[in-house]
Length: 171
Ligand code: FEO
Image (cartoon, rainbow, N blue to C red; front, side):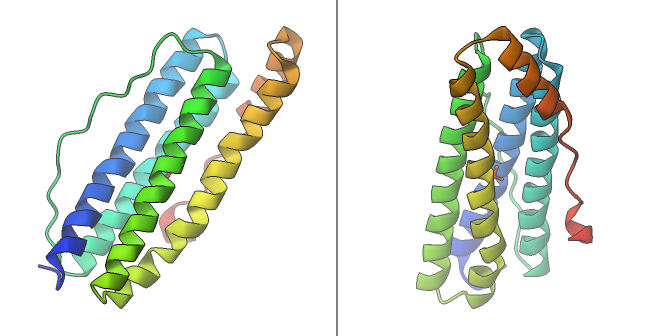
């Protein structure tokens, strides 16, 4: 058990948040396929893997601190009848929510004088800046083309080139 049970509980909750994120992006990958956008599918599938890696990072950290893992159910993602733009708008809104979760977690670690967790969360603070920026960049492009099919084709080709990030161990 970790020194602060509140922190332990919050870290477990974050594992669930990250697994839900993975699940949501997987649903978005399927929706992109339905829309005939293989590049978008590729992007969301890679994002799905990244979220699994985030969950893993929290999982490993809790175990390293002699904490107890308690896995809860993962909620059903509400994805359906989307457009390319609505998918990325949902992605951005979700990442903003995750940023808030990380920020709340960091505040809690400080209040509980859990310095190790406070430092551990630094990586996620930086990561969230990138997560929001990535979604915002695609939204900007989609707004620029304003539904133009040629433009959408080009964005899809660009998203097809996204490669999986190195795993946690390699970073
Ligand atoms: Fe795990 Fe997209 O934040």
